[in-house]
Image (cartoon, rainbow, N blue to C red; front, side, top):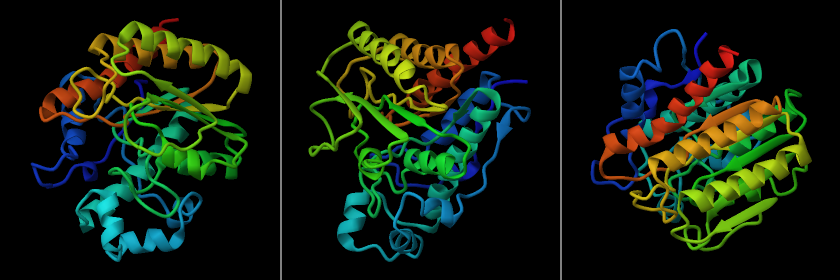
Length: 306
């Protein structure tokens, strides 16, 4: 079989073209992977929407209902940063379902990738930074509550700190939050992850990759998680509008391979989500996100060949 990939057409919908959030990147990523032969009917998994009781594992039910029913206050909408619509509700809840499905596929097959996810700024009872529900926190609590995993490690390589994830899971001893992020970047007020690794601006490929390798070599044998949730944000890229770490395409590919290989070498399944990425050239951005899926597919084929 081919590498399991998770996507749904709800992920991209008609959206203001001038808005900073690149809503169309998800459909463009799908088209890119289809054109390259990585995504096809044989390995495409389409998710259901996330059930309300699963969302409430990480989120206040009142907040969930306010969002669903267009009852958020003006300040809540401003902090969310996205214009409310029925399509946004459907997309948001479907995407969390996609991350849950990706985690289940990873546990079953060792590796699976989502074509969305990584909404790590969402907090227990409010949205922030284009993130409405925190799929990483939902997955962690779902896997532990259902008995599918005893210990989950979140390895967040988005350029911004996973503040929402850190705060939601602050007291969850079996959900380990790790955030590698640019120290001088959003959010201004940082949370306390289990492991925060702040990085200086303009670090570049080699310095960044050394930190990633060192962190994995220490954390994976120390915690021995049952699964790693990998947020493969590409806003670390040198051309990203909101990131400052100056990685190249090759550097991102090296990072993705390092994370996946280190986990699989220890028989730890990897559930990968795409995280953040911002560029006015949406096609270039989609190809950048696709580095994750190309890297994962290459490793998948290498392991299949023995």
